[in-house]
Amino acid sequence: MPQRSEVVVITGASGGVGRAAARRFARDGARIGLIARGRRGLEATAREVEAAGGQALVLPVDVAEYDQVQAAASSVEDAFGEIDVWVNDAMVTVYAEFLDIEPAEFKRATEVSYLGMVWGTRVALQRMVERDRGSLVQVCSAMSYRGIPLQSPYCGAKHACKGFTESIITELLHHKSKVQVSMIQLPGLNTTQFTWGRTKLPKQTMPVPPIYQPEVAADAIHYAAHHKRRQVYVGIPTVANIIGERVAPWLLDRYLAKTGYKSQMTSHDLDPAGHDNLFTPIEEDRGAHGPFDDLAHGISPQYELAKRRGMVFAGLGAAIVGASAAAIRSAR
Image (tube, rainbow, N blue to C red; front, side):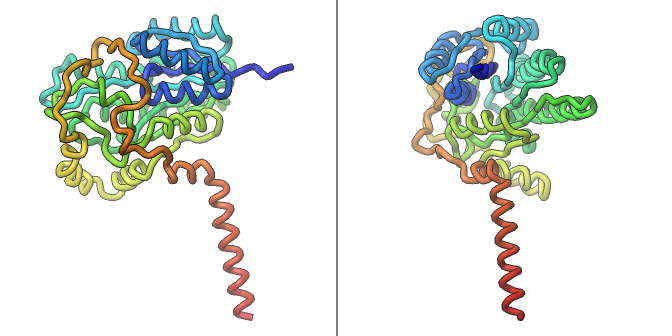
């Protein structure tokens, strides 16, 4: 009997990391529910999924609205069957100093980036816990551990996502559930976030270098969905930020105060056309990549080693044993 192809739901699937993740799962022949607000981007993602060998269901949904997320999950299961993997990736943000962000803007960014993950998690777990199987992947960030200037809504939401997810993990462990929950902690990525995020800055926004392509994140999401990893760190900057925050947060405060503004802006004036998806989607297909292909890395050696940590540790162990044996022979 042929194996049933995997059923996957991805929020934020119209561009950036979500779109790259959809393509990655499609290579396995997955049947994918694609959730985002912008129909044009979703339809383009669906074409890419089908070209890669998967099946797609387009679901124009605002993840900040719980009833819409619940209805989308039901539509996926009606069309494809039981959901195996749920990926929470949707986000919006505002690039500005905190006092320049209006309360309604901050609220909206929090509802999408944080509550969108909460609602997706609830809808997914309502189904997975009862069946005692499934994989939930939370797309987080190095900013889950370390806030930076000019992105207080996003940093606050990602800190909240980490704390929320840790709470869920402990509850599932208490009940000895077989449902798997993973967090992906990401570095700066070359995504559409920088072409459609609301900004009040004078220059074009950019990810903090070094920059990685969204396909690196997509591979990490796919890997986490199929391996028992509580967290997956992607990129040396992510690891460095997490370690720095634990060792000397006061030093990071001063470093980011000095460098955090310039590192998030290019020297180019901002093109205001279509540069705001906070309250309404931008009905264009902008793909998965942002405008920084020339600067972005297509691979993260740190992540590749992290995936193979068993082999790395085994190699280190063998090297230690070999060195010890050589030392003993020399002593004799």
